[in-house]
Length: 296
Image 1 (cartoon, one colour):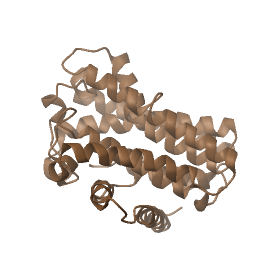
Image 2 (cartoon, rainbow, N blue to C red):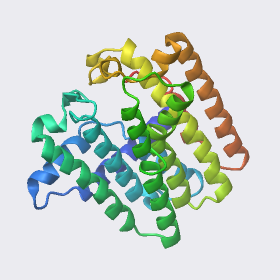
Image 3 (spheres, helix red, strand yellow):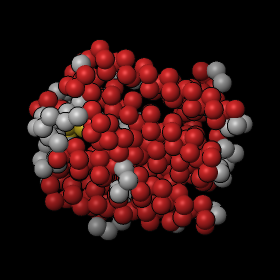
């Protein structure tokens, strides 16, 4: 796939996700609640997780429509987590994606409820999906586990518990494997399931998601100390302010960069293995290698 073809396909996928989100988020009573939910949902995210989900679905022979409601739902869950992350009781951030955070606009109570609303509405959206019921239930369970008891939620909890403490690299990896990698694993595995992948292929996507999620967090840690608020759209040095353990604080900047490269070597090996099993990974390979060079 050449770059022109890739860019057109990426734009098409993002437009499909945006259209689905707008349809699901049509205003209803109480209007202020849905306004607060939409404020963060449409604040300019990259739609990384939905694109990964659709890519995995199509890579195994599925159709975009098979995964679209799940892609939209996953973005709702991701957005809920950001709203709650930004709250004073968590990271206490005033800006997200260059705009005031949800609680700065709507107040803390409404921001909490907006996050809760997005989380619960995500599962309503998934379970209203049309398609094979066994795939829908399996994919919904994958997302439930990786956003909660086996992923993002427990990673966030341990991250908060570790603030201000000196932790071992093993625990830091546990945090990243769950907090950041959780929804990335959910995206690839749920997408594969909705596309009809068997257990072996789904596990291949799981391995890629694990490495990609940890690599994504390593770059976040690097950018937190090397970039600027203007570029990132959120405060820099926030990890230091909140006394969070990061790859940079534990290993230093140069070793963090080396680890980042190592993870991407593993990711590409995982993609090669899927290709050997006749999975169409052309778009996914190009997308992941572009993510490697992200600046925000």
